[in-house]
Amino acid sequence: MTLDEKLEGKVEIWYKDDKKDKNGVPNIITVEIDTEKNKILRIINQERNSKIVPGNINIDKWSVDSIDVIDMARKVFAQNDAFSFTTAWLSGTSTDKNGKEIWNATFYNENTKKAYYLQVDVYILFHIKI
Image (cartoon, rainbow, N blue to C red; front, side, top):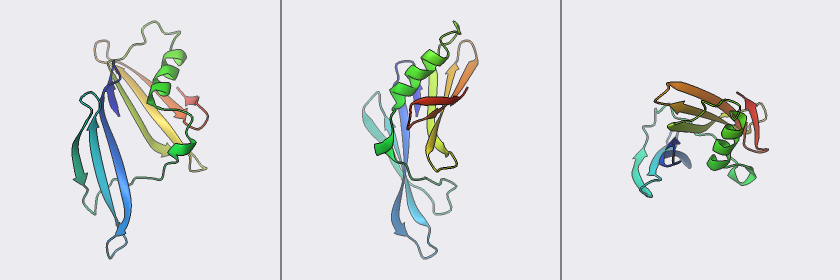
């Protein structure tokens, strides 16, 4: 996700289906969504040799969504009067040793050129690392 200060922007979702080619490589589809315009911008069927490797996610077990992560960042960085952002990047590509998703969040202010980083366990709504 790439969101602006109004929490609108582009979201990319990678989907891996069960169809596989003769070498056992699955189809990977990328869907790009514009949340401000509330429409799908494009759907791309990735090349079979794509470096994109979507993992399994357990969205039904998450205790957090993107708004919760941004609210948590505001609380975590509250002691920093300079904390504000013009762009937020959220990704759920990291997994811990148990295979659970860890969200990486980066908050960047284009005016001050400052960046803030946060890792969140989406199962218990707890920040792991700043």
